[in-house]
Amino acid sequence: MVYIHNDEMPEDYPPVYTVSALTRAIREALEPRFPLVWVSGEVSNLRQPPSGHYYFTLKDEGAQIRAVFFKGSHQHLRYKPEEGMQVLCRGRLTVYEQRGEYQLVLDYLEPLGLGALAQAFEALKQRLAAEGLFDPARKKPLPFLPRRLALVTSPTGAVVRDFLRLQRQRFPNVEVLICPVKVQGAEAAGEIARAVEELPAVPGVEVIILARGGGSLEDLWPFNEEIVARAIARCPIPVVSAVGHEVDFTISDFVADVRAATPSHAVAVVLPDKAELQGRIARLAGSLLRAWRRHLSAERRHLAQMTRRLPDLRRRLTELRLRVDERGEALTRRLGRLLEARRQELRLGCSRLVLLSPGKRLTAERQRLRSAGQELFRAWQRALSERRRHLLVAREHLQKLDPLAILNRGYAVATTLPEGVIIRDPAQAPPGSAIRVRVARGRMDCRVEAGRGGPGERDGG
Image (cartoon, rainbow, N blue to C red; front, side):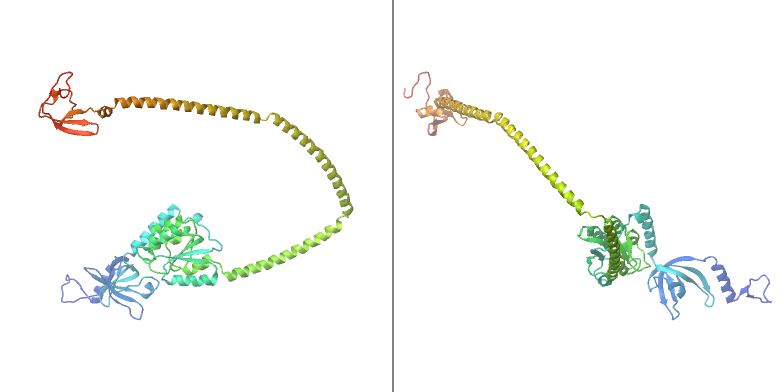
C-alpha cells in the first residue's frame, strides 16, 4: 500500500492514499469477490472501433455499468450486441485503473429470453429421448430411388430454388411436390405438423423433406415444437430434416429418420446422382457381360467333353420308339374294352332308372292336385253364394228396422228444444213450447198451441 506520510501529522492519524493506491486497493477487493457474474440489461451507447471490440453501457431503470466485449470473445458467437437490445451476458467484474471505473469484461452474450428457449429445448429433448422418439431402431430407411418427393418449406424462400436446381442436376426424373407452409412465426409449427400428417395420403409420395434456411434460435423454433416432433414420429413414410446450417440442431433433426446438414445437402442424401448411377450400371453391365461370356465359354467346353464321352444313342432311341408303339397299341385295345364295359353298365343303369322313374307318380299326383283344386273352387263358390244370400236377408231386415223407412211412410219424430228429448207425452211440451219435428226429408221448428193426451188419441179427434 502506498500512501503519503507527513511528519507534522499525528501518528494515530489515518493514512492518506494516492489515487493509484486507492484504485488498486478497490480493484484487489472487488475483482476476487465477483470473478464471474451473469447480468441482464439494455445495450446503450454501443460503439465498435476498428479493433473489432464492442464497447457499450449495460443499463436498466435504476443504474448502468460499462461493458467491453473483446473481439476474440465474440467472433465465434451467433449473436452480436445491438443498440437497444435486451441481453443476458456473462463476464467478470474489473476496475479500469486509468479512469477509476469498474466495468464488465464479457465472454458470452445472447438476447434476453434465449436462455428460456434453450432450457425449453433441452427439457423437450430429454423428455422425447426418454420416450424413445430418438431411438435409431424406430427410424425408417430411405428408399433407394423415390419416385416422388414432398418438400415442406416456404414457397418464397431460396430453399425451393436451390433444392429444385440441385434435384434437376442429380436426378431430373424424380417428381418434387412442393407443400407450402410457414417456417417462422406462431402459426408455423401447426402448418408443418399438419403437412407431415396429410402428405402420406398423397399417392406416390415416398419421402417427406422438412427444409428451412439458417436463422436464429427463435427463427428455427417451429422445428423445436412438440407438435412437429410427434407428427414426424407418427409419419408412416421416411422424413428428412434439413433445417438451418450444419451447426444448427433442432428437435426435428433428432426425431426425423434422417438429418441433412442443409437443405442442399438433403438432395444428395435423398437422391443418387443419375450420371454416376448410369456409369455404375454401365460398369456392372460390362462386368456381368464379361462374366457371362466366360461362363458360357466354359459351359461350351464342358458340353463338348461330355458329348465325346456319350455313346451313340440312335439305335437305343429306335428300339425305345418301337417299344413305345407296341405299348401304345396294347393300351389302346385295353382302353377300348374297358370303355365298352362301362358303356354296357351305363345302359343297364339307364334302364333301371326308367323303371324307377318318378314321372308316372308325379303325373298322378298332379292329376289329384288338379281335381282337389277344382273341388275347392266349387266349395268356395257355394260358400260365397250362401254368404251373399244371408247378407241380402240381413239387409232386408235392417231396412225394415230403419227409422228413416218409418218416416218415409208419413210419420214424424218430435223433440224438445233445446234439449233434443223425444216427446212421447203431450205433458213434455206444454202450449207455447218450442219443439223440432223431423220428417223423412228434413226438419221443422214449431211452437205448441195446444196438447191433448190419452191412449187411442188421433190427430183431429
